[in-house]
Image 1: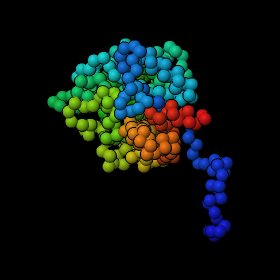
Image 2: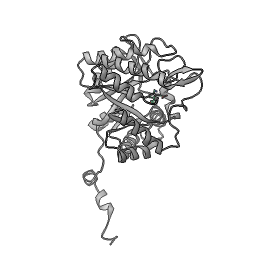
Image 3: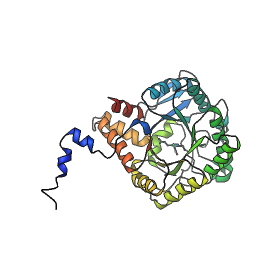
Image 4: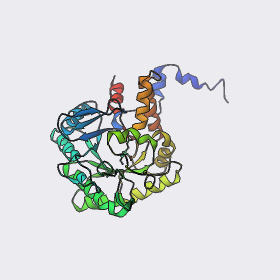
Length: 324
Ligand code: PBG
């Protein structure tokens, strides 16, 4: 029996009814806000391609974190813009490095925030690749030691979660072993497991000053045409000890988020990346779209696809909109 007995519109008549039967309720509880830490004090420089997002010194990061906490956002993820770069990204290991100082500042301020750190070399190497080079090629195994040292130094500074984004094989296992050997068995690993080689990272590379100086990242990040391979990457990261797995970017890969959600019983995160943010901001500035409506629709879509955790530059706006 169908129409006229069944009338799906019956449940859409009023906001009360629609809200009663709503399948997904967007909440601030799953949001992670990305932030860029630079050297100095009192520095706050807006990223031109990402309106509302700043490169900031550690003291300013702490100030914005107070606001993030008060909005009920549970976590921030930190990216570092170091004082100096070298072929091996050694400055990423310094106990007084930009990210380490920002973590300490946030913890000292006793903010009720989870501090996540991006673990990668691209922001710290002079060539901009995510690993160390030999004859112009990114060397996998030689990169693992420095990545795990970086994760360890973040843990020592007080990071709650480390998030390797380099896409080297075996990095999750190497980081887990290193952390455990130094009694950081409670530091969580959120792995960028299915990280695609994407044009949507463009604005981030301005924000983090991490564009590769030659070539591209196709030799380590995933080919956008592949889906089954994402499941393999996730399975390997879980075997190596990942606690949370991530799909990145989000919007062109909603199918991957859904596949990972259905296949694995672990928390799934998605990264709503810089280019996805910048497109919305640019269109909204031209009054071509209604920013609030579009952002809430995008984040609901990412959640509906299966991501319980969403890393997004829209986090503060969303938290405000959901409050009011
Ligand atoms: C570092 C890293 C990148 C992003 C997160 N971690 C850039 C890249 O791989 O080039 C992208 C985040 C964004 O675009 O918002 N490897």
